[in-house]
Image (tube, rainbow, N blue to C red; front, side, top):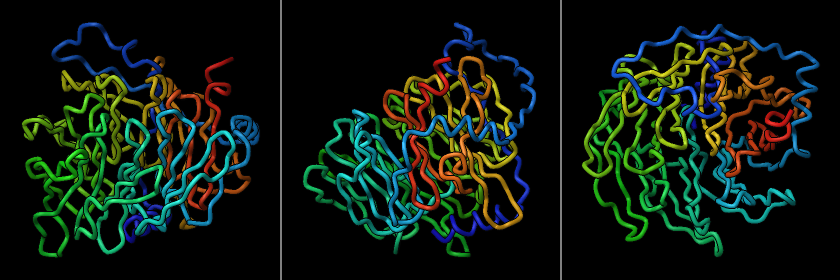
Length: 399
């Protein structure tokens, strides 16, 4: 939490970080040739676009908002996840509280008391549903990393790990059978973690079943973890916001390192797999989002957008849209976050950026986001505790 707050203050104070929004690849398979050459040439980047957030643009984005924001008094919305049927939205707040919302009625269904916020600028969402929707897993930080498995019908919980000193990150495999999280195994002279073991935890036996080979970091940083859609690979990221910015892919079965995208020479702050697992979107610290082909280990394209830090990226479940969350440095100590959408067929931005001002009338940061399973709704969580639902199907995909 302290790291996240200090980073936001640093960015707000005017740290010059140039980041690119993403260019949509509505259907990643469409632009990629059927046969990927062994050494494809990198196409020149599209011209930088800087959408202007003027009054007509605000009015245009307001039309996408579905009803008033969902509100809670638990602080910023640090992570969200839709249930498998899209009817339930789970949100986790800075104070660790977890709330389940009925998307149709916009009412609270249930709330759980956690142990502190997710604390991760540049980390993954920190909350996920099991594929059957019967359980929820969350990560929080108070006296250390705590990973909790929640039973949805009863609200009862099981601590997978509790108060794990120097622990970081969490992700759930697509089939819901494995949890992965980072456990510090080596400290540097300043008592910061310099190497993690990535623990694999079996949801059926509720026991650790091993770990991946060590992951070294260059500086204290949020640890991001993400399973590939087929569950065979695990991507591990030390966010470049404060750390080395490196991403490594591991084989879950052999638990060995497979590859390091772009040779570890770029400073990454965010990552996401496309739904078919063929590509990764990698947010670069210098302001570029790379569309990286997983099998060939080659860059397929790169997207240039608004200046700012690409704090997170996520694909819509249908693979047609890429959402990128951008932190814009400012001089008033309050970073201005917005969401830029990209069409993954044309690799062009979709409409105007989504902003908190368009939905709430005030300049609030959009600090988390999640797509509904049918890709029709994008939920964005604000730093003042509101959740905005955007109607993407009507607003963007239908003329």
